[in-house]
Amino acid sequence: MNCKWKSKNNKFCNRNVKSGYTCIFHKNNKTKRENILFKHYIKKEKITYFLGFCFEEDFNIKEILNYKYNYLIFEECIFYKKADFSNFIFKGKIKFLNCKFLDEVWFFDSNIDANFIMEGNYFEEKIINNKIFRNTNINCQSFKLTGNTNLPRLDGIAFSKETKFILRDCHYTKNYNYIGKVNYTIAEIQAEKIHDDKNIGYYTYYERKYNTINRNDFGNYGEYLISKVLNYIARELMGYGEHLSKFFIYIISIISIFAFLYMLIGVTTASGEIIKFDFKNTNSIFGFLKMYIEFWYFSVITFSTVGFGDMTINGIIGKILVCLEVFIGITIQSTWAALIIKRMFR
Image 1 (cartoon, one colour):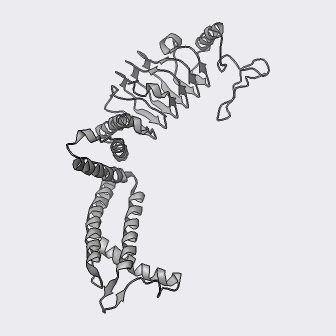
Image 2 (cartoon, rainbow, N blue to C red):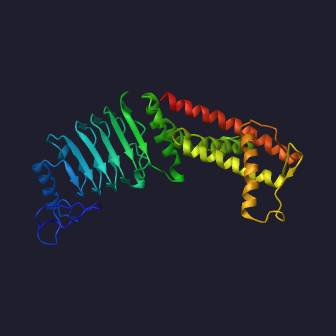
C-alpha cells in the first residue's frame, strides 16, 4: 500500500508502507532511530524534491546534501527545529513552497548562484527580527520572495548587479512596520540599481506604507500632525505608476463628489438661469440624473481648468470649492501626465 500522506494540492506519496501508515519522510513523532534512517534515506536516494517532509530534528544542509543536484524543492515541508542553510553554495535552482519554519532559519554566508524562489511560506513570529540572509551573496538572475508570512529582515544580503529581486505580498502587522520598511527599501534599492522601473513604484509605495512616524521625533504636535498627513498623502499617491486604473478611479471620484457639492450650491448659466438641486422640484430619478450630468460637466471643466464660461458658481462657498478643485486638478493632471510619460519611456 502507498503512504497515506496527501498534500494540500492533492499530491500523493507513492512509497510502499503498511496499510493506513505514513512513510518515514512524512511521519510525525519519529523515534531517534527513525530520525537517523530519515537522514540516511535522503542521502541514499539523493532526494532533491522534498514534498511534505517533516524535519523534527535540527536540519543542516551541509550534513545531508553531500551529493550533486540540478534543483532543490522544499514543498509543504515542516521544520520543527532549526533549519541551517549557512555556508553552502547553491549551484542549482532552489524553491521553498508553502513550508513552515517553526524555529530559527539561517542562510548565513552562503552563495546563491541559481534562481531562488520562496513562496507562501510561514515563519515563526519570534524570528521575524533575525537577519536570515546575513552575508549571503545573491548571484542568480532571479531572487523571488512572494506571499510569505512573517518574512524576517533582509538587511545584510548582498545582490549582484544583474539580480532581479521580486518582493511581493509580504505584509506586516503594526508591531513590525519597521521590518516591512527595511525589506521594501532593500527591494526598492535593488530595483533602482537594475533599472526595474516596473517594480520601483510598488516598492516605494510599501516602503512609505510601513514608514513609522513617532511623536517623540518632533518638537511639537503640529509638526507631528503635518508629517502624518503628508506621509498619508504620499503613501496614497505613490505606486500609482503601477495602477493607472486606480488613479483614474480617484479622478472620477473627485469630479463626482464636487459635482454633488455644486448641485447643493447652484450655478448660473450664461443666459442668467440659476440651476440648483431642490427636493420639491425634482420628482423623478431621471430628472435628478439629468441635473447631475449638468453639474458633473461643470465639475469636469473646472477640474481640467478649461472653464468655458457657460456656467458660473454661486456664492462664496462655491468659489472656495472651485478654487480647491482647480488646485487638486492641476496637481493630479501633472502627476497623471508624468506617469503616462514614464510608462512610454519604459
